Image (cartoon, rainbow, N blue to C red):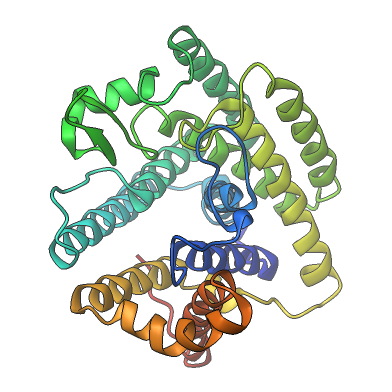
Length: 354
């Protein structure tokens, strides 16, 4: 079977990227509406859904792009090589962005883990697994990963810094983790090593969903989504939602919402013909993410970021509307600038594949 492209998947990926830009770039971090912030530790805000949605769509894309090539037969060595090469490029791009951030923002150390690094690792593992096993088997593997993570993490608990994931990352990288306290020697990284296992489970669940979509079984999406929401909510009193640790209950809860989101986009766009809003972002997702990050580092490093926010938004909006609305307006304007860039690229057929 040949690979088929669904506008709904590009649109969902694009809306997710737009949401990333929105929550990552407020005008003033001291004045942000609560739904646009991550939960401090336990819990799940709308913002906490964004990264799981993106990894879920990575899995959907694997089912739509890689699985058909596997089913068509032929040599798999070249396909696996391309998967590995693309994953490596994504990881290297993440490392390069962190190097630029350290230089432009005068950060004290280089951080090896990060968002693109996690995307690259999950794409690599899920993509290779998809060349060896059927998508439904990958769903069973996802459940196994969640149970394994639970078994590993439960004995040490889920408190900040003292949990197994945080202690492992600190033992491996010391002060190079995202948060590190020199006085106690304790640290934590939200995209660390051990929490990548349940993040891979999120990606594998996306592979299963993508296979259902590809085979015309989209009616299964909302049923599975509701089931995962119920299971995640039922598990959460004993195993709290936690994006920092990517807990198994968090995986089930966010994957449930992602399944419902995919089904809704499929119904509205693929079946009813509504415009695929977000597609411009979706077809150049990594490019937009990386380009916007470089813009932030450059503007902040030059000292222009705060000036643009103050003159363009805060000085005249804050007396009229309070401090949170101008901060949000700045973030929306930032998304708008990159939407124009992505739309311009789309109209000219420019797709930069990492």
